[in-house]
Length: 154
Image (cartoon, rainbow, N blue to C red):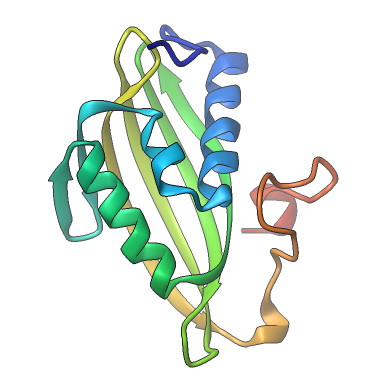
């Protein structure tokens, strides 16, 4: 299985890869999202460390059960060869109706076939009021006309 674009990345292909990841995560379909990663992909997400597609699916199911109305925007930060660095923000609410915005950075490393073999994520959450939300978009891919992180001042 191949997942173009494949490394080595240039500005265009790295940007494509970031947008494809954003769109997949905004689908909130764990089984589909997991297919972008190697079968033994290594992850560090906040304080969790795990590997493999089954663990990725389990993680995403847990995540989206507690992070309701999840909306994510990613932006390319840097790239080199097989690696891409991304900054992101997402908004969600908890079961109690409280809203949050999470800010973070991810470091990605890809196998030659374009599947991600390593993902390291550092994330911080802040509470926001509902009227402070900036990501008013439907579930699924972010519409082309919706601003990105830089345009939103994030």
